[in-house]
Image (cartoon, rainbow, N blue to C red; front, side, top):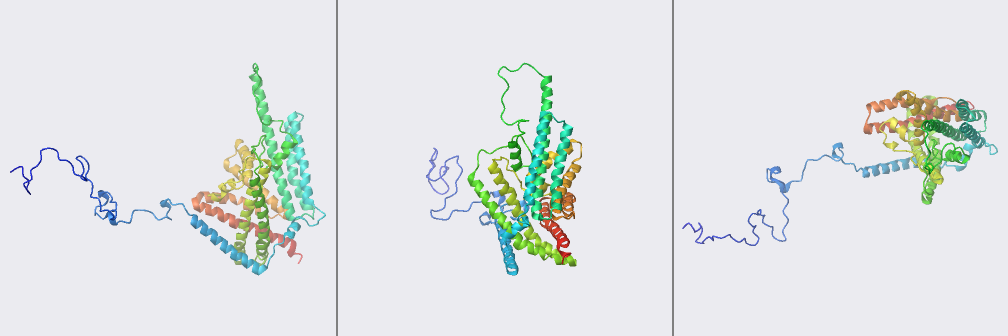
Length: 483
């Protein structure tokens, strides 16, 4: 009886039962029944511990953040950026059309020539640029005499100081005294002389450092003199002091897109013709675009701003300021690309100058200090190498050294504006010095995107304020009295 099952008289076998087809073998986990062929695949079930109500097949939610939340980690905003560009183009297209309807076509390429020349037979700006070679040769011959030992360091320092001081004072006096020079021509000339001042200052410093290093090496060599090597010293490539004091070396440095002198500049292996042609095309296109925007958009806005200034109508002044901010900022951005990317790369490519870092990502600036350190790398490198670090080595505090750098920058900004306009109002100087408290406020209270927004606002609003101030004062000084 014990050998029969409860449901029948079938006798159990004593040996191991052979597994049937489709049934799991002994020791294997039991598999679920497969769905019939052609039927739908069952939904994957979550683990039993995360599905207490056995409703996993119907779930469509999970814990996650919204895409625009900062904690979501989402960063692909390309579509929003494209939308901003489209909106910017459409809004400015409307302004451009409104400008054409109101003023007509004001672009006149011939008028650009009159901005540089009052008298076609008088070229004072070009003459001043040619005369600048005198100061170049004076600096080169002073260094040659110093390298030969025929001048003492004190006399050489005095000659260099006189030469550098004359570079700043001589063209300013000519601009103030000669009536035939135009403001635009004067700005161009004084910019050339300012660049020459910074370059020759660096030329003097580097050669002075080379003489000091040479004397130090000579002293160590005398104190540690020993038997010479049988096969001589190892030959080294490159130019060494004082072999660098040649006309070729000097004029290469003067035309190179840098303000900091070196004995051996990095050089590119060849001139890339396609790259050069692209940059040349950009130069020609953007300079014409700049002239057109200034004549068609900016000049009428500035002219219409004079009456609110005379009447001291503050609401209208603010409206004119905001209206001027858009074309002024757009022109500044185009000028930045034209000069720092297109023009300097053309110059560097022709001269095979290897260091092409003329700017960094200043548009991501989250502080005012970061902007000034990254938007104009040639000037930043000069200030750091020849102004800031020497002051730090003399024991000056960092804050004092930074203030001195802003003070020097403020001087040159005012120099390049007040002298050509032949009036001294110090708006550019005060605007640059205002960057010091602004940098402290932004660095102290604003971070991240808020700091970046503050930098952009200062650029967009600050420049039109200075433009309107100078134009108003120039208009009052030169035109209002004669009417």
